[in-house]
Length: 123
Image (cartoon, rainbow, N blue to C red; front, side):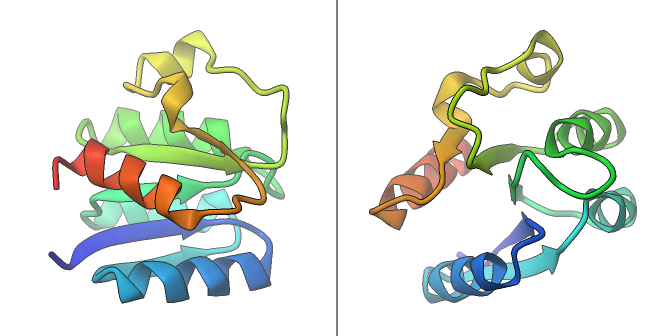
C-alpha cells in the first residue's frame, strides 16, 4: 500500500505514537508540529491524506485543511481533536469533510481512525 500520511499535531508523543501505528499499517508518515510547515510541504509535495489536530500554534487545523484543499484539490484530511464540541463548518464541508471525519482524542481503538482513512482512500 505505502500511502503518504501527514500527521499535523503539536503534541510530540502523539505524533510519535500515530507514526508508529500507521507505519505498522504500511503508511509513509511525515510529521509536522505546526500547520504552516505542513502547508509548505503540501504545496510542494503529494500526499494521500492528513491527520490534523484542530488546535495548533499559529494557523489552526481547520485553516490548514481549507488552504491545503484550495491549493491541492485532491487533498484529504481527518481531524483528530480534543475539542468535543467541534462541528464541521461550511468551509470544511466544501473540502469534502463530514462529521465522520472528526475523531475525539484519545481514541481507545486506533483501528477506527485507520478504517476511516482507508475508506477515504478507497483501500
